[in-house]
Length: 265
Ligand SMILES: [Fe+2]
Ligand SMILES: [Fe+2]
Image 1: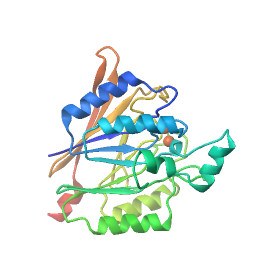
Image 2: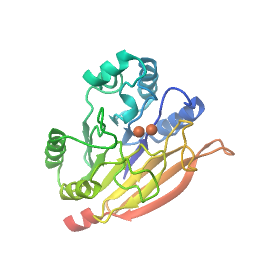
Image 3: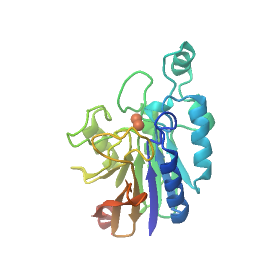
Image 4: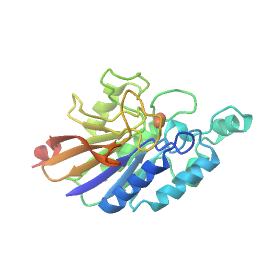
């Protein structure tokens, strides 16, 4: 059995909730998951001090970790220096403080995880380049048969008609491409609204809410995902903050049969 923790949209900076960050840290340390995935928006405005605070926090999380950046992790106006940096070296701060590369992969005996930087310095929404597509294809091609293939992106591929449509561009085409690569599970953040879904292609989507920012949206509170994978099933648990109990509790759970595995047997 494999256990993943999926945190997103930490947003160090204004409205950051340090108390919730401590509760989540305790949860992750107690569970010692096989992998903790952080799907972007570590900061509010990509300020150096926000990045440094995010670095100090993720240092405390038990390894292994897989991170990708979010749209808030590249410098933004108002001052000219930030705009210049966004135009020339948009990911320098992320690469200095969070992880050396904006695209990343992780392999274990049960998992093969590939994450891409879905952000563009000008174009809103999720987009990736042909070289990133090549990276994803090459990485998944070296995954051993039978592992659970997971794709991580900051922007959403499926928004169920409920949220503003600034997700990944041409989502149906991207989902078909990911299905062809054998992806079973997609993890994303960005909307600050937890969601579990299965696409027409049969891919499971687990979208995490904001773990510890006061920027909650659409009536959703703070939340993270706990994911359990075994040979037959893939379980997504949305762990939401319960103010009365002052801890994160299981708010929803969906259990999926692993179709890819069935086809391989
Ligand atoms: Fe966010
Ligand atoms: Fe975002």
